[in-house]
Image (cartoon, rainbow, N blue to C red):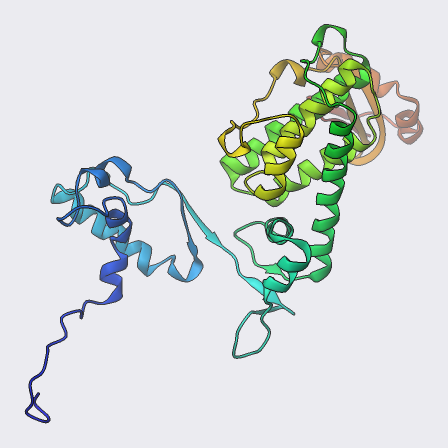
Length: 339
């Protein structure tokens, strides 16, 4: 030691932490290798989805990119980029400020977990805001998430207590109401699959499931087909919510008559035939303002839609004899009459 003259041991771990963080993901992919990396890293990389804080979105990601290209040039990796997709998640705020121990504005979720369960707290956090935005903590929001899970549990419980359904939906004999509900089920599957799988937006996916639960609560058809549709809908909801509220969905899946754990099940698939509609509802605007709605054939041409809109009684009242300058038809959405 230069100070006291006694024996000393030199510190060798002196690399900047950015050096380690520039390639840790590659080492994780080949953690059992005796050398720096092995072929496992070539197999697993690049990272499919990187989730990290915004404070790391410049220097760390820049260095990781440079280091990946160095490892590629040295033959250690075969990928050109370290990460395929990036999500920088927002922060949890309390009273409008970032939670901080020094400020004393932190929230311990353990008390809420003990009161409502981990699933409820997870659901609230995922529902409160898109993942890349900050969310404002709200105890009342947690209570709302708890009420929704109770509604879902009640519907699944009442259905299973009534015997559930083991038969497939007979698509050839559906009533108009059954067709509508089944269409809404598969529209929800389509939307949630896109929101989670493509957009990585969870709050809208949860909202879509909440809406479907509300629709089911009004569906009282106890015929064989009605029960089969309710079974199909509940199974779809439970499967779509399982990544977010795994514990309750694990139990509900068993209650719906399945022996295999839900974690081993596949994501629900959209029945494209169920999405087809004989008629659709279009909005009628006059000078850009909503004035009426009409139901038209799903196969109606733009000319047919225009004629129906121009003859709609409510629209005519707002046209009020004025000359029509043009009619804009947005397929399957709206008709705007400019006077």
